[in-house]
Image: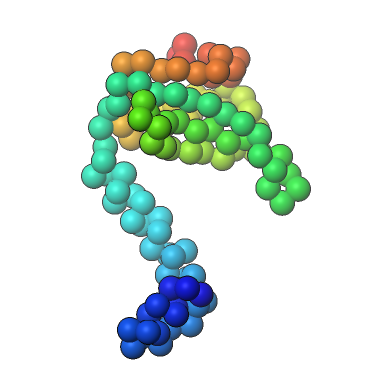
Length: 116
């Protein structure tokens, strides 16, 4: 709603639902472009996983950050297993290259995935 008001002040009459649809459509595209431009291997990654409740169902959220605290990637899964952890790490390596050092919370699934 704030964006539609800002645009209205500048002479562009747009309904707030239109702005919402724009965000839904173009945010993933802009994110993919950003990831391609900022593709580099970071020296140190920190990988963590946690449970979160979404609409009454428990899901598993994987998150990787670099040494400066910037989020490299996140991945939401319905279950926590070796395959999910391995797929997330494989996805990180594909996006950013291999890291020299990876720090985890020593979760069993992450240990198995790192060994592969």
